[in-house]
Length: 87
Length: 459
Image 1: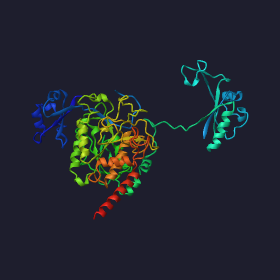
Image 2: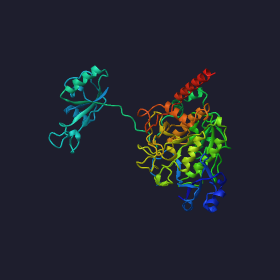
Image 3: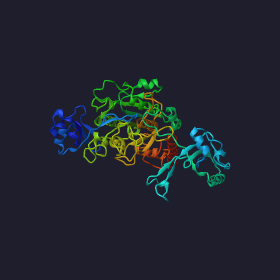
Image 4: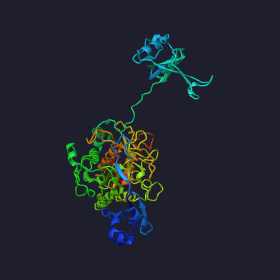
């Protein structure tokens, strides 16, 4: 799990990738630029970013951080396979 | 009524059995015909070894301690097949006469046994026309519900429109409102033919006029170990685009249905249950949060229940005896769809509840494992059941936008009108039963009539 999702609760003025990096002291290469800053709950002002696992551990106690979450693999559900392939 | 009649040893029957012959004349096994009992002459008698108790006086049918079986002709018994009258009085008389004969050990039921559940690799059961009939597509269409002006987002491996057209589909399509992850070379509607195209075809069974949005998140360039996989962060991005899309629709005309025929096959890809960053059991995970946000904005979200059913799970399942319907597939704000074949039997691979976020999963069943898109020999998995249900939801949304009927209210109607299968009411194999477009259309018409009457009387 190279990168993980970090949920943030942000004030409106804080909701930009640059401001989040500044607030949390993250280097540009520690944050996935393609993912950016995603608003996951407009009502709750919750956002998520995708960052390196080590950087996530470093910022986990920041006041804006609500939690650090897994980024598991997903696959199509069908048609089902008969064999027992890779683990 | 069909029965199996067990006879004691008879030299004539034993000899016939050894020769593999059909039942010799009835007189060979019993002194006189038994009124009402008709023996099937085509059924070769089967020699049944007789269990003998290890200790005197013990019942040999407890099988504990271990019993001995004798195939000696003089100790063995023989089964033949026959019928007794269905009329209760005549049946009782025939049974009494038969069991009174010294040569008869007993008369036993010969119940109908059925083929096994459909499993991975089994041939298709029926076709998409059968599914359309079973779904009640005509009733929906007669009520003016075929998905026109309703957006259906296919979050999958991408859609190939040329294939759909070659198979007789003519869906509306919005390239502008579709989304392709960064780095994917193909464009919306022109992705390689595969799983996503199957889903798009199956949506069209009930909602042929829906507008398809192609979200090829499983073609992401940040995959796991296979070409057709992605990461949950890709789904978070896709949902953020959908959230923006529905918020751009006028509140009075919101109609967005989201098909998700994917999920997680192994808990080893996740943080363990109990870890604060876990996905499978954690409603605070960012993806579970954004799913709830999108539903609250008026979207109908459908997830496949999964293919980790106990009878014959997909070879990729790694949940063991754990609950396989997890994460957003078990979210209280989504419709989790199990699979039945066109005979209304649960397919053996369809995941069973309880769910992890909400124990009352799956919600309902839809048809799968039929000849359809031509992408695979059978449109299979709960992957196909999900878009079949998505099509019904999209059809309804043409007349009932989420401002009139909220996603939760529509789910409740789907549960109420589903054809109950399995145990009475909700169960963890079928949910509330198999989706029924005919009953749904009739119920919606009734709601419409009564609301017209109410508004008329208030004037």
